Length: 415
Image (cartoon, rainbow, N blue to C red; front, side, top):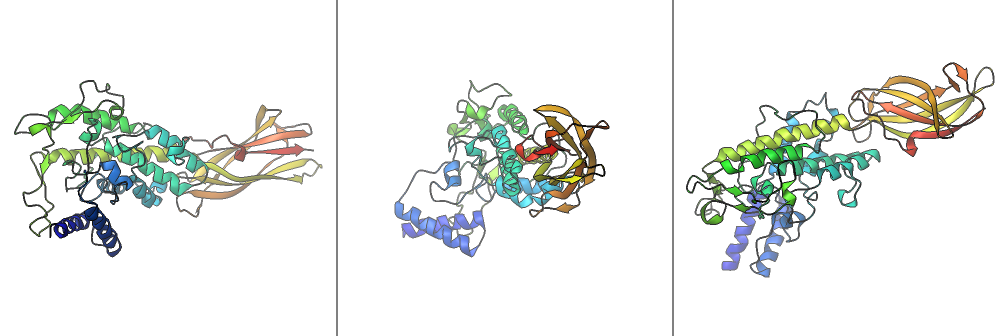
């Protein structure tokens, strides 16, 4: 009978946390059965639950539903789809990425390398944002941007910024209410997308001493006395600890008979519920800025650049460049064709601008099939016959230029 009660308890928790879905219900039942047969085990860390190391479903930041998903949904509602069309089009990818805990280096870390995740150079980043984006893997790029949002949002959580080791029963992260209200945005609009991680972390750290348990007048969360200075990532520093009664988190507690009276009551109580609501808001504000900053900084791209030759009236060869231009946000692009010989830049052979009037297959990017010509002249004078390199440079309305790469250069023999 005890085993059956334990099984029902785990199933009821899974239903409350994940919603009633036939497929996931069956999966959760099997997972619960496996747990009961295996006997009692230590509570998994949050990252273990996330990565499936203990066989469970990912719990996100909130035991009764994904706070990360709630934050990014609220943030997306505040972002103008006309101004940031890529963010609107990639909303499903961003939501998926915001549920991804793989930005944490391991299951003991309360933070992650958001700058590295943006660059996407190291293997653990799975291409990050920029590498995926530059390789035209747009769904993956925006998923990884969602993961940057996830790590940034974590910095609104006291246990994360105080670097307190915790599991899925942490009462702040397990608090049932995911109400995210974003009345305004306080953070500067001109930071790099990865910079809001540290801004939010510092803000939360400053608040820690003032968040006290009224029964004990002790802080709920206590940073290590030798924690890194503000401006440095505290999640890679020494561990903090819970405060409150008996040195444990007393921020919120469930009713005494929670899950045992047949009502599956998931209401938790706290002396200061406004703390969590304020931090959810801060996480939403930072998320908006991360997404806006990223959208403004992603560059135009050149795809399938080729060159062909035709003959002018006087028998001189003319280079015809053909390419696909893509941009995440701009409706028009400027272009310039730089002319090189023997590695030396000679000047601009052609320039102009064109609109981006259609969407690519992902729906995220604007694109245009473009052809332009170089007549073989610079500043009105015909260059001598020989081998030249033509480099295509695109500039969007945010001032971003396509990356220097082999895909933006072609060789041409001028006759």
